[in-house]
Amino acid sequence: MSRKRHDSSSALFTLGTLESEVLSIVCEGGGGSVGEVRSKLSRNFAYTTVMTTLDRLYKKNLLERHKAGRRFLYAPRIFRRAEEDLQTSQTSARNSHILTLSPFVSYLLDAVGTYDETLLQELEKKIAIRRQQFEQKETA
Image 1 (cartoon, rainbow, N blue to C red):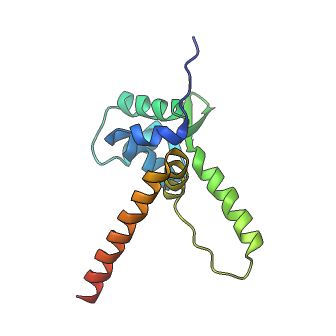
Image 2 (cartoon, helix red, strand yellow):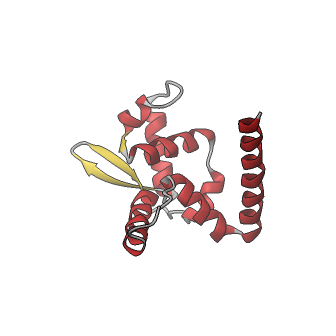
């Protein structure tokens, strides 16, 4: 029985707390095994819990995985796309400063923009508010 993999643009909006933390760890580290991800979590979860969470993220089409011996190694799908986008940007703007976003932030922007224009506008407003808060703290 094959399971249908979710569309990644809407999957981001249905992530639980543990899924979000695991996805963040995999994106920041560029990938890893269940044990490697488990060792970086904020709490001590059972190996099988982390394994199930990684499998769910894979089935939501947010992670890639491949077999390495007896274990699976997971990597962010968005990381490769972000690297390709960065290489394209660097080629077209060789001498200019290039702002690089973390793969997770880059994916979030793509997913929100694809999912709903209204959500993208709300995200822009929240970013502007947060930026003002940071500026106020710096001047205080």
